[in-house]
Length: 449
Image 1 (cartoon, rainbow, N blue to C red):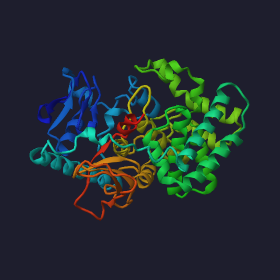
Image 2: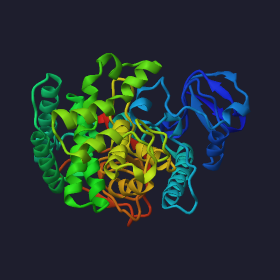
Image 3: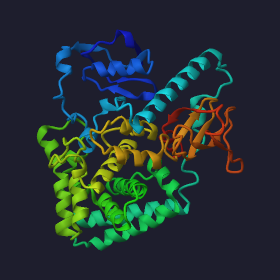
Image 4: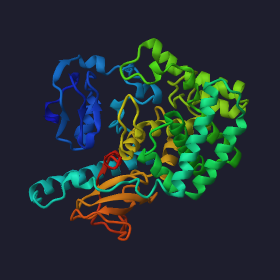
């Protein structure tokens, strides 16, 4: 990729290819003009350059870029249509300085600066002949201890059971809500037994079939954890999990030509995508005979905190709490899961995206609950430390989300550690080490397929 100096960027510039910061963080997609706040973010984070394979193709007047009428949904990206998050918001770190979220963002910026300084020092001091290469990390699998484990079998079973429900509904077979309730009860029990494993499965992405059922189970797992963190009563948690399991079942009423389309969506196709919430609510009420709250969660999970969502543009706390929870879970799951129309993000990038929302799409209280249970580096994340060793996040500190507990997978000499040589490091206790970058777990999975 080509480096473009931050000092050379101007408001209104449009590039022929996406523009990225370090760690492959998207600043603006292709054909999207730069805004003043994009440049301000780069300056405030101390980033001297950006990366792109493209070139400047045009500039637009600054006046147009300051408009508040910017579309909320990028119709050229199915991800934005299904989650309500435009990818050019990934580094939008604007937040209330007094908020707890902003404190996390400041920690992220400090961590970023620390990692950049360490990287510059390495470029000067590192002996490339002896340093472990990036290829050397693709020697071990994040799934090697999973697929024969009890937690993995339980996770896979939940997906298969929900897929049977979806298949029956698609084929017009009569179903009862009891089938979903049974999956909900089993999920909550399995989650109590294996919370860390389940989060790791969501990030790992080893299961590549039953996509709708898998994403629904993933959203239900995350929703259950947030509902528990928010201390909702048990019956409410059950409804939230049921709503999460069914939140996208209305997609079964849409054609694959739309739900799996790789290119841009027409206005008519976008409206059809948005109609899935209505289809879902109708399925819950009229086909499964589910209760009103589950139907409401399904109907409202794309409403936005700022009132710009759909289908009814409901604002703030008028949105059902279950729908607000599922909205966050659905967005995170979509970002970390590979789709036919987009690549996945690592968990760290997805968390940053949610933190940068600034009370537009999501309830800030729900975002805080999510961050407390997931961390900045979610459990199961694969990370590179500042001494070049590779580790897996195995636990988090809610009061210090940038410094989780990690288990080494490869030491700083490039030697892979087997099951008989388990080394666990608490980064909160060992201040000499810190996370330099998150690594895409797909690197390891693909190597072992």
